[in-house]
Length: 241
Image (cartoon, rainbow, N blue to C red):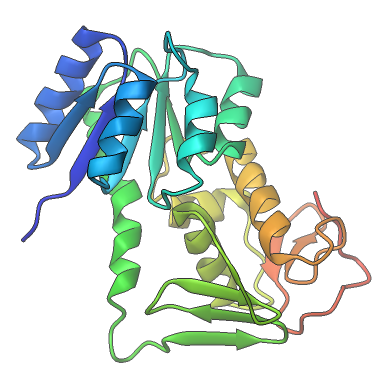
């Protein structure tokens, strides 16, 4: 079985060494970059299965780098940072990050987060019993090719956004609390974050909703959570929060 390739982008050699040791032990192939410019050069040569990056780096901050990488790279990006600012965490997710872990971190937690973020690739191999397409008015989700069409136009989604859409679309009209969403999409109970779910819902709506402020598909159900509206029309109670 082919080993997953992981890029670690961090200007701290000690952090690099720690993450490399634990992830290599788990069988991952590690590529190390001590700066954003070095990482960009590496991406020209090879596309990893997942990227781990710090936010604070000397030549370019991680949020700017993530935004730049996202123009060509669709796979998971995990931020690892010593910054405790919640606004910074939200910005990192809005820039295209799939997950965030704070320094200092438990190496075992890092490994679990990496494995969790890599599991989305299983969607590339749906079982014969699964429908390979989900069709709704104005929206088509191809599970085999991992593509989404809105009004017959292709839409590019990040890994977590695609997972989130599939989870909701497979059970239309069922209301999911943010904690349920986090548990299923992030495959984790310990580090639940309502803001993380809210940010990804916000980003997903921007990509699939004709008018994100009046969602047709991803609808907020009062204070209970979110549900997928299979009819493709604006619900009288739809709100974008």
